[in-house]
Image 1 (cartoon, rainbow, N blue to C red):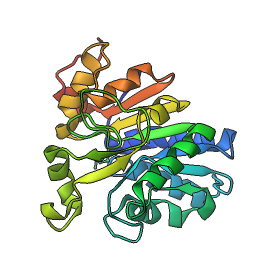
Image 2: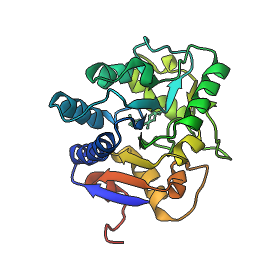
Image 3: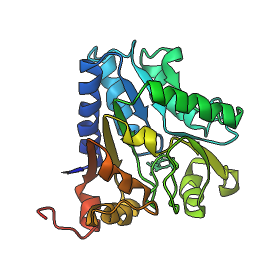
Image 4: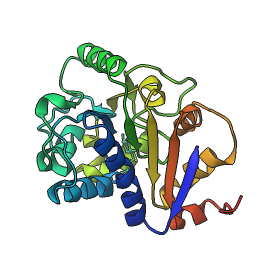
Length: 246
Ligand code: GLP
């Protein structure tokens, strides 16, 4: 697992976008694994900007998102599908049939099977991950075990609180979500986690402090990924109390 410390969230986003753009350019039909939340917003902004500047072509690109709230369809403003439409899909020449999203309002069993079938046939070339304050990735919450396949998760109180900022009130946040499991993540050719902000410092510190893979810290699975990169800005890194030259 490689660590990159940048000067700012902006720089982290540019470094991350360069990694995505390298894959898109080298492999025009690549499968991009995508995340939602505030962390990847800068990445999507750069991808849209560079697409509009004529540097990128998404016409053969496939995408698959990490997760979705149970009960929310793509037209719901707080759904991750809606978020993706707004920040990326409606802005570039991606084909609708090449976009893989969970329909949170659909039949769960069917959605889960659709996702796992897709991932088995279409391993991800590059995957962006944000990180929850408790170390979750996608919606893989701390647990006694890691779950391999796509599955339904009961969200932690802390996650509901943290994500309430996107909803009118906390009680509007769905209590459950569907998430890609660890096999989709570990099978990705490259995985890049971007973290920014004080609230993530504890989880990032725990991720960097030893060599353990612990389901109570879901992001620790990155240690078994073949090419995993963690990008943090200096402000967050300083919060971890670590010495950069360690
Ligand atoms: C949600 C998403 C995660 C994301 C996390 C952090 O829980 N399911 O994929 O990483 O939020 O979000 P943010 O980047 O807004 O801090």
